[in-house]
Length: 101
Image 1 (cartoon, rainbow, N blue to C red):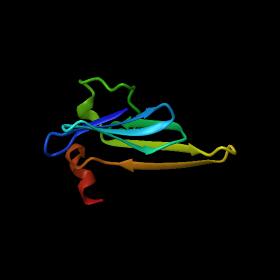
Image 2 (cartoon, rainbow, N blue to C red):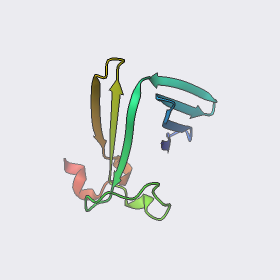
Image 3 (cartoon, rainbow, N blue to C red):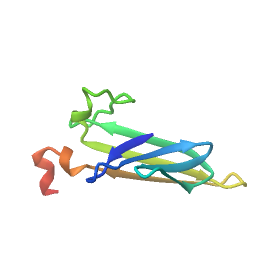
Image 4 (tube, rainbow, N blue to C red):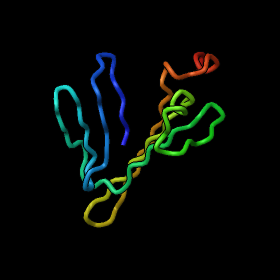
């Protein structure tokens, strides 16, 4: 699962639940199913050196996160699969050298 707090201190969680990608927002307590037939949800955290961090990421290592990769694989009833991947670099976690790219 992936948990973060927005600028209003609202907790937002994304997780895989019974083959569905689910988003939980607290407060208010709202749960949305964003996708079904989800076969894989991978979230990988990387430090400044580009090394993957062990998950769950400990509180001591959280400040070292510089990049987060998300991968989701959806399947249909016939076994066809579609994989999507994205990378984010949180602005407030970047090293200054990343600010110009």
